[in-house]
Length: 226
Image 1 (cartoon, helix red, strand yellow):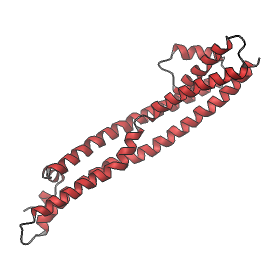
Image 2: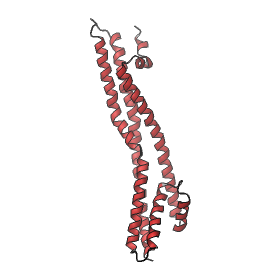
Image 3: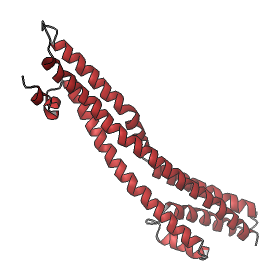
Image 4: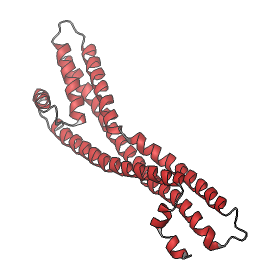
């Protein structure tokens, strides 16, 4: 028996028991999906940050609110999350302002509720698939460990009728079982790192949205009492 050849990674995977192969295949699929979501969220969060910064510069640059609103309406499918929040709030404010006898505080409250509803939708969109990364990071090591335990049991069962077991006989079975644990860690570690990083980035964006809503509500209040 050539121990070096038997310990080659591909030989170990092909020689594993059906259950361990199934675990490895599952972890490979999960890892591929995890990396797909990692890159997807990286582009999504980066675009959201750039769009937020661009709109904040326009908003605080002294542009007319009506012009900003009209621009948001005309480009509804390409604007960023913060601009959608602004559009929802200003649209509700303008609707209530056109109604006679509406109290200024009711105008602002209506605009705030509209912005809050849009804010929740935008945050749901930004946080989409983060739960998958969290689940991958927490569950994958245990799935890999299950494959390892099963593989070791399979290896020892194969030695049941052997009078004297040697390292050459035990090593390939143990090694192929440990590949499942390695694949579990390979799937889990990037998912955990990405989840923590993206959660932090989304929290920072969320704080910017909430700060904008409060400041914009104050601006609308001043317009309402004029």
